[in-house]
Structure formats: C-alpha cells, structure tokens
Image (cartoon, rainbow, N blue to C red):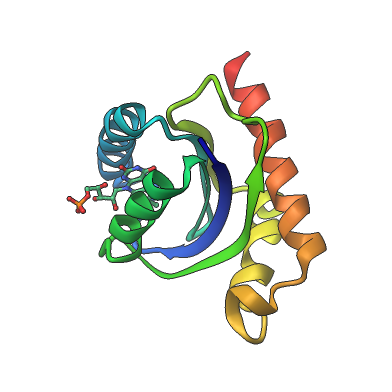
Length: 144
Ligand SMILES: Cc1cc2nc3c(=O)[nH]c(=O)nc-3n(C[C@H](O)[C@H](O)[C@H](O)COP(=O)(O)O)c2cc1C
C-alpha cells in the first residue's frame, strides 16, 4: 500500500476560544473518519490559521482533502508539502490536536506559507518542512 503525507495551511473562520465547541466537532468527525480510512495526523489552530498533517493511503488522504477543501469553517486551503513516505510519523493519532491557542510563535510558522506568492507551490520548502517538524514536536508534547 503506498502511503503519503500532506501538509496544508488555511485561514480559520472559527472564532477561538469562543467557538471551541466547533473545533471539538471537527476533531470528533476527523477521529472517526480518519480511523476508518487508516489516516493519521495532527491539527494546529493558532491565531486565525489552521495547519494540518494528514498521512495515509493516497486515495484516503485525497478523499479527506476533498472534504476539507470545501469546508466553510476555513478558506484558502493551501497544500505546502506532499510526498510519498515509507513510514508514518503520527502513527499513534487518528487526529491529534497538537496545539490550539494564541501563540505568535506557532502562527509565525503558518502565516508566511499562506501568503507566499504563487500559493502552495510557491511556498518556500524549508518553511514547510519547519512547520511539519514543529507540528511533530507539538504532537509529542501534547501526548505527555
Ligand atoms: C481545519 C479542518 C480540519 C479537518 N480535518 C478533518 C480530518 O482530518 N478528517 C476528516 O474526516 N474531516 C476533517 N474535517 C472535516 C471535513 O471538512 C468534513 O466536514 C468531514 O470530513 C465530512 O465530510 P463531508 O462534508 O464530505 O461529508 C476538517 C475540517 C476542518 C475545518
């Protein structure tokens, strides 16, 4: 089975923390559907942006991205990293909420990718990799 990982960023239309219940709904849906499709990953919500890693079988990731892309709870969904993988990095989580809050530090890793000229394809690859590893670190910290 061929596995892939995908990282996208987007502009959130949720008002947090007031609409934390809507974020919980996203996580509940994600956890059950991702588990059924053998997709794993993590979500970050910081200062009006989302960043999410999805990893799993090609077709499963594509079908979740089709839903996510048309979801009215966010906009400007921009894929910044996509590649084939031999092993999962988020194997323990159907969808971890790696971070939710007002950190400028976390947001500074997301916003420049969304605003990169040319969109996802034009996003500097180093920034996308740094965001990927930040999400991985936050995921490990969230588990403790
Ligand atoms: C930021 C964000 C992340 C989401 N992540 C996932 C996810 O990982 N898995 C998932 O099944 N749905 C996710 N959703 C919800 C989907 O967009 C969608 O509502 C849900 O999968 C139902 O699909 P459908 O609308 O095609 O029926 C996410 C939504 C948002 C706004």
